[in-house]
Length: 102
Image (cartoon, rainbow, N blue to C red; front, side, top):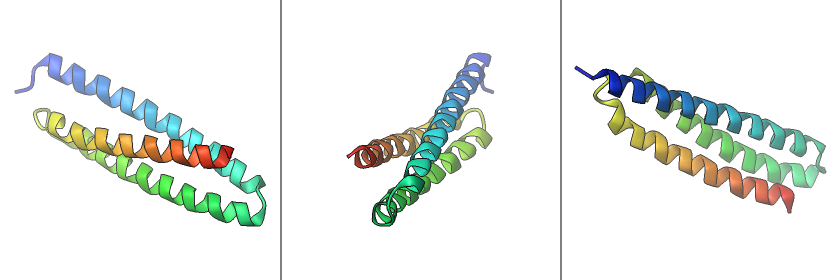
């Protein structure tokens, strides 16, 4: 049986991950707003970046939700997948943001 410390650790991680996903969703929305103001040619380029970001966000969200549903003892193992998906998403966001700012 998982200890209270493990349960608290999981809850803290979940809260942090959810806050980070919410923040990144807002940032993706901001990029979408920028794309909507762009010229047609630039908008197509931005849309490709946004589709990539959304796909990576969906992967991170799915892994996060799977981890939330995992048994108390298994969540630590699933956390690695969430962390990897999160890093991929952050990298993709930085790349897209750099292209938007260029």
